[in-house]
Image (cartoon, rainbow, N blue to C red; front, side):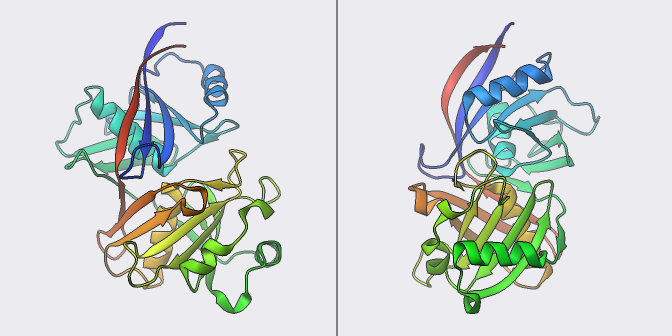
Length: 280
């Protein structure tokens, strides 16, 4: 075991402690995979990350991402939070204003022009129809009024999402997340437009995460997949803001910005709340 730099931060919120917490082992080189998994289970946070030296010559660092039960190829709030922790710890990108993170889905670019509001370029998302049995199970279990379902799909950007767009944020917020649990249900994403007087354009919920909770506070990878889906179908023509975590007393805020006809950026604020060392 050795002493390593450690940061715990709060991601995708303007209000510290009301976002999605992330544990970051900044000096991850030399930590065995078994130790990574054990430490991630011990932190008991949605995700714990380990920053490693880059293997790809284009990258500034390599990131491994773990939930308490499994490793993930990509996740949004670990991407932004780990980048913020790396910069806070003295990391310098090869190219000013762009951090290139190597992870399970390849190189993810992070716009660090404004260190207070980082944006990652959303990785490609596979879009396909949701399987009928999955659709029916979600609708029946959550008791979603069928007339209020506008769109549905299965999205894949590393994680695989079963998503539905409902006709309002109010309908999204009214659903009982305790009815769906992993592993019977996996990664359900719901989105609905907010009322015109709300500060955000959409409300998003992510139900049945593998972390053991009934609902994830704020989910960058889901918002990334939703953005690509809406863009592909012509429903994302300008910058939008998303609220998430409302039903579980979080104040999540995600910014979505189209880059061109096929690419989008996902942004949010990160706050460093705990900084020190850990023996691993």
